Amino acid sequence: MSDAASQVVYFYDRHPISCEIILAKLRASRGHLDGLRPEELFAHDQDHYGGLTATDELARAAQIGNGSRVADFCAGLGGTMRYLAHKYGADVTGIELTPARVAGARELTRRVGLHDTARIVEGNVMEVPLPDASVDAVVSQEAFCHVPDVKRALGEALRILGTDGRLAFTDWIANQPLTANDAQLMWDGMAIQPLRSIPDYRSLVESVGFRVISAQDLTEEWGPILKQRLAMYQRLREDARQAGTPMGHDAFHESYIRFVDLIQERKLGGVRVVGAK
Ligand SMILES: C[S@@+](CC[C@H](N)C(=O)[O-])C[C@H]1O[C@@H](n2cnc3c(N)ncnc32)[C@H](O)[C@@H]1O
Image (cartoon, rainbow, N blue to C red):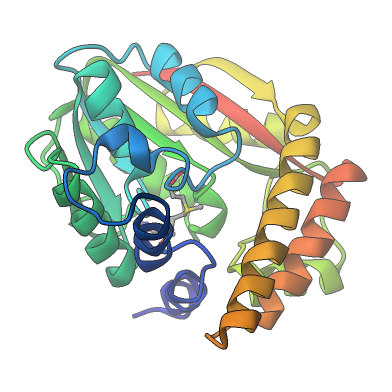
């Protein structure tokens, strides 16, 4: 495995949201895990900013509807993939690098009975294990920031999309290059690769062969969301400390605090890009 992939796996193996934590919370609140419904997971399994509303926005942009064939790049625990299958009736394949996330996504999907229409495949989005022209839409949420060669991943999206297929994703952006110190902190704590500005992202997506429909700045929206997430991570860390279980990754907490500051300072931000083949 490359250094970049190992750093991603190291980070997600210690991430404060995991399949085990989600199931433990549900077991505590409902007493057992029998007959779990997809909606019961949604408060816990959406590992991106803005929860279901953000996914609805991507679904609209990518024109996802009943029977749409969708690939979710960097699907994590599969929250997005299950939601698109459940709410929109889409047939979704998630591509995910971290084996523990793949196993967690499979377990959660099986428990809510969506395994026929939401499946996860272990793989790298720079080399997608799906045939040419096999999907109608490619989505991704806050994950290309981990990918060493985003151009290659976008090329894979173009390859697997059929004619008029749609690409819709959100990601981190940098309005100016980070200081060497901040860049190192983001890499050590969260496996973040060098980032780009919105104009550079637009050019990158076009250079692969997509027509860019929109590239919307989400920095303003993300500000309050990220402060809430930081508070949530701090709560989870304190819960783990009190329970005497592993508290996760110190470098993650340090870098997340700095990340939230960088967003408030507008040095980092977010974008939603929508493109068509
Ligand atoms: C922030 S999580 C997003 C999860 C999911 N999109 C969601 O919204 O719930 C990013 C995920 O991307 C995965 N990832 C990072 N680099 C990848 C790559 N090159 N190929 C496939 N997955 C990757 C990580 O393992 C992690 O699970």
